[in-house]
Amino acid sequence: MEFTEFTEFTEFTGSAQSAQFGVRGFEDVRLPGADGVEVAAWVGGSGSPVVLLHGFPQTRLMWRHVAERLAAEHTVICPDLRGYGASGKPAATGPEVYAKRTMAADVVALAAALGHRRFALVGHDRGALVAFRAGLDHPGAVSHLGILDVVPTLDMWDVLHGTSAAVGYHLYLMAQPPGLPETMIANSADAFFGSFLDAWANDPAALPPGVRAEYLRASAAAVPSIVADYRASAGIDVLHDRADLDAGTRLAMPVTVVQQDWGARLGYDAAGLWRAWAPDLDHRLTRAGHFMAEEAPDEIAATVRALLAR
Image 1 (cartoon, rainbow, N blue to C red):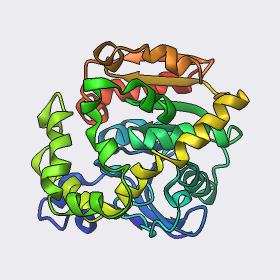
Image 2 (image 1 turned 45 degrees about the horizontal axis):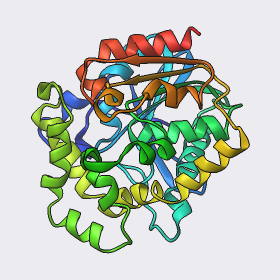
Image 3 (image 1 turned 60 degrees about the vertical axis):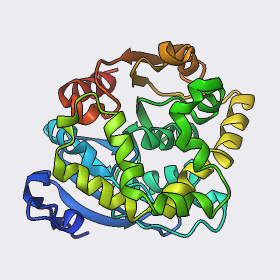
């Protein structure tokens, strides 16, 4: 397998400032996912493998700081999820195309193609939901599981109620039937996606102008697939979670969850929700904002190392 040395971010930013976004020592690969959809990823470092999955409205770029910190001890793989960034964006011909089960299978296929049948997996936001599903569906492949700032899909819908649910208005918007959400978001893409970058960052300096511009560009280019990803979480993903909960399926590996204190704000026991799914749980709160991998990369890298030591 041939790899192309990845030293600049030109392909993704198209910007004269692209060199500052490069993750030094990493290579850019493109490999087929579970059903042939191309998955783009960075690969770097050496040692036991760790896969890092990005969140919304972001790409693998969000891991640039953490990836470099972990690469001294681990082989680090940072994909763009299907439907995001430089990965393939298949048409949503059915709910299974962007089901977290399908997206998790992409990750397992990517890691296997790189020679890793077993790996640690860490996800943020949407990527954490994919990681959660991978842990349930592929316990033989996922050795350790890290989750940043989400609760499982089934629980997410249960904890949003009354006026507090306004914080998750985008979940309800993108749950609507195809057509209107895509049109509304595409017609105001920068305002829509930018509002989350502004509202969810405790430290706006962690998202410098060039990085912010790249997130907006990548998200505007992926509106139909991003909406399809969210729409799946209001349908097929809930069905899969409910089936596992009813069957008693639990996460068999060590699990670390790092969250803002959303439970206190919205009135639920976040650690308790996760403990129902993960018997071997380390639940931590952070002072960083939602974009914690960029706001507090030393903390997140140290947390991943502690998870892998369990």
